[in-house]
Image (cartoon, rainbow, N blue to C red):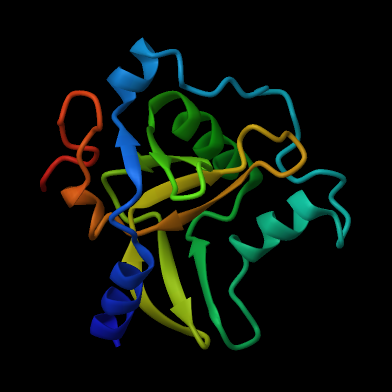
Length: 162
């Protein structure tokens, strides 16, 4: 099952994505500024985009499909991951120009779940839509292939080799 996850994960990655390490992103003024006082769960009501994303990535799924969930489901930890990722992460620039932050947690913080079965450990946070306070959210992901990512500016590693 892990091999299937690894293949699917690698297929989703594009050679066209570009990366900036935290230091280069900082030097270029590209690190996001997020309001640490904002609610990362929105109104807290089902149907609210932010709340639905929080629930999706903190509660074990009841249906089929693929999702990644955090092991620590507390709001304080969820909020902390957003703040740390914005300040300490590296920037991923997708084929479409959309940016995300990648922060390597250096330990397993979540699990990839496929059809209600854990298939892999996740040790990285991906913060997406951080330029929109009504859609900013994040989820755990694997650094499995991220060890190959290099900074566009300095050529340094985005995630150090373990």
